[in-house]
Length: 245
Image (cartoon, rainbow, N blue to C red; front, side, top):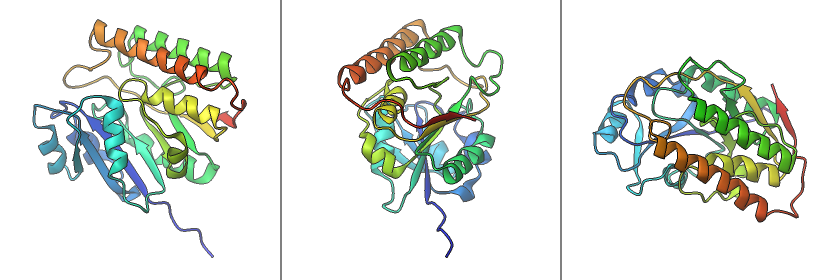
């Protein structure tokens, strides 16, 4: 008896990415996904229309915030969905890495697979010094507090639906990714990283790293999320299954 293929969904939060959203949607291996959801997070530039024209299902979440957009996408999943991939809309994530993430989740028995830009190839200028330092600091904190060796908080990742239900993610904005990783550690889920490519933004300006204020807000929120999870979980189990491939 053969094991049925997983039913996968892709969620892409998007805020004012009318020029960027089409190319990654065109380059995706669409046969892997039962749903491709672009969550329009309060755009004012026609992002939703561009996403629909490229064949995506558009979900509207007018309240801005990366976490809110992700949660809106999760609320629109079909009941049979078995795993969810998250991807940015700005052409920085490489659609060519999607197959590797899907294969790793399907064949490795993992609950969460994070695409690491640190282990992979980051195009010069794609990660600012502030981003690199923030990643280094946060992943070191996770190692000190929980003994887990992450290298990145990268946006490209895939997680099983069962794990998502247990994670009960609530952060409305910049803390979403680190909340996912910290809670996975706390719950003892099977997590791993694989190398992925990362490219410079081709159009527009980043909502986080594009401004000093945006970078500062994101950095503070990420560190606050780590602290909040640590403070709430002093008696949680340590030492989840973890690997770097």
